[in-house]
Length: 405
Ligand SMILES: O=C(O)CCC(=O)C(=O)O
Ligand SMILES: [Fe+2]
Image (cartoon, rainbow, N blue to C red; front, side, top):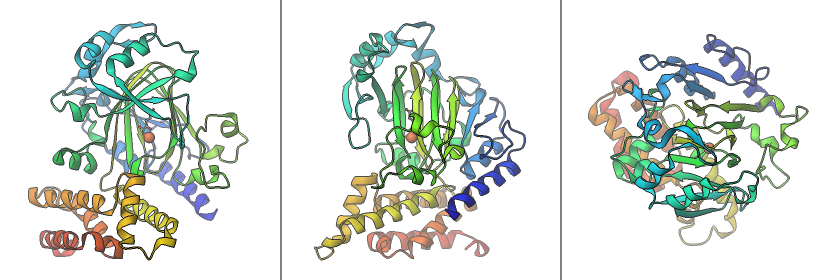
């Protein structure tokens, strides 16, 4: 209880001090409105946006900066959209998309069903999905299909549909995935009016940014930790917080809840650990990335450690089995998509790159050093990657000036 109250006060204070020039200068308790940070294409100063990111506060990025590349609009606007809207498919240029990518297999969620706290996923060709959208009738909600988590950028590294806005571009996660040629965290989403994403926090408590190419999204956000009070007696979070039960002003969490409508051409920043639910208010096409960097990497590491403790408690009765710790790591990866080894590989890869290029010596290297020093205090982490961690630390110590160690 004490922690949650102090969390809110903390946010309010920072919010008032740091971002006075923006729309919402009141504390989050009073003003549940998100701040819009306007940056023009030629403006190189992203300090306000970076301030929000480093303080883990949501904002909407608006202005040319989130839809242009080198002064001209992202190609996705010209290629995937048309000037006049159609009935089922809005501004989507269905003919172009179908002709270029119709044969590809895309992941699709069934928004009318619930399985294990999520929408069950299926696969179809992009052509089949676009045919479905063309004939979609908004009243038949049970059949609402949402194309999501489509790794378009990974499948088409030569097609530059958009560019990551500069304030979101320090991204260790996708930098690692691209360097290694493995599945990344950059996605395309496309859905009809009424398609939605249930209440969740993002993978490994990463950040996310999401830009609307066409259409509108309604976001419901709860600050990190605020979701605890929404849990039922078994500790399960709600699947859908858009219902009256949660939306009511009388609800005790009302003050922490934010509701936001994001327009076409705007990008939203979702902070680490903030739970959110998303509803498409029109046919919507969006691109989004999950990522972490020097600012939120401690949160990701802490979440990994906490989740491992949960896994250990779950299978505590099997402690005598051979390689019990190894089994815990397998379960951790099955649950989160990452285990200790996966996470440390990313950190060490980024550390070595930064040392080699000798760029931003203190910018990224110092937070990496802090994480690795914390890793050295974690017995399990050392069991998993002691040689690599020690080797990396030795490099870092050699690299950093004495006063920074
Ligand atoms: O747009 C959506 O439906 C979900 C996006 C989301 O959850 C995210 O960007 O973190
Ligand atoms: Fe999300």
